[in-house]
Figure (cartoon, rainbow, N blue to C red):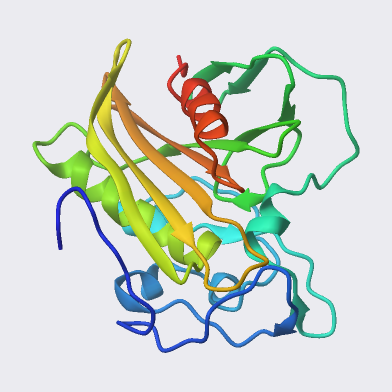
Length: 242
């Protein structure tokens, strides 16, 4: 595995057929690999979400996020499309995302609003833009202060969310580096998912693990289609966390 570029070719470890957000199909996927034991049964079936909770346990168990998808007749819609689509009617735009559980705030530029309910369980707040970008936050017990721990935990979280949210035919690491934002220190990792079919456009996923005074927070951003101006706008919102 290379440090700055990581490509998961089709079929290298996952024998499943390429995922197409525009198609419907019977639910047959299940989480596998080193994260499988950390995910609840609902996550393995991509079923309805469980209520967010803060219980004891390690980083891997706390990282078990599951999508809030609508399941009907054993069929589900595309993952990126479902997460990026608002689940509630449009509301008045707010100027700030406030997450009391994670003890963070994110100033929101014009065109963004805070969601009343995050679309992925385990997260305690979310905000989205009129263009379809999404930012989510949640508290974490990852050992971000230990040397190298933040990088490992961020890589694990990015791989988990890529498997749950992206399902790209090729997923490439486009950035992986330590990060400092005001009083926070931590690590960030960004992925780009590409698809073989002509319908699905590339998607962008960024994960940040930040620690301040012994408290850690995970910030996740999701964008589709992935275009440079849109990616820069999403990154600017994520790095404005306070």
